Image (cartoon, rainbow, N blue to C red):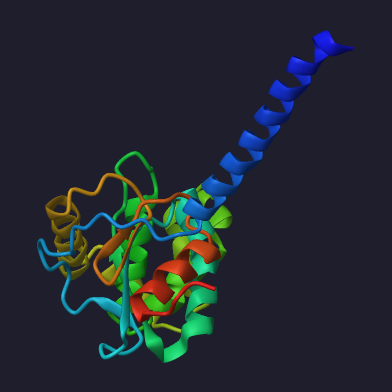
Length: 219
């Protein structure tokens, strides 16, 4: 019996260390990770697509790709945060269609075309909500026009704006901002200038970042 005792002690110590490590990982994962690099760089498209007040104490900026799976998973997280924090949180979306995604640029153009009619956020939500439908469609352009038909816009104007120079310039301006900030993946999310580098960004992580920006002490 005694010769097995050291092994039992080692096993117990290993279990305790494992549990402690998991707890430490979870606590770190739920804390906002700051880069210490404030958001400067190129200004991006102007005016930006902003939801909320410029006077909000917390400003979130997202660089997103409508074809990107992690971006689609972050979408409901952000919606939840907007619901919880209300007028204390403003959200700005920047176009960052990755070149490796076949339909990302088309989707970005669709969002910007809707934006020219003041319906960017409605199209933003439609693109994420119907993401699998337009991604799986044989005719992506037709599928994007169908998405646009659900957001109450002038479809004939929308079709023309899809290929407009104004839409191209807005996306190019956001891409210049992306390059100036040396971003390489989506979603790239900043809260009051600090980038959240933990992935995926859960509602717990986002709450922690927003609360930190508000000066709310963690419970």
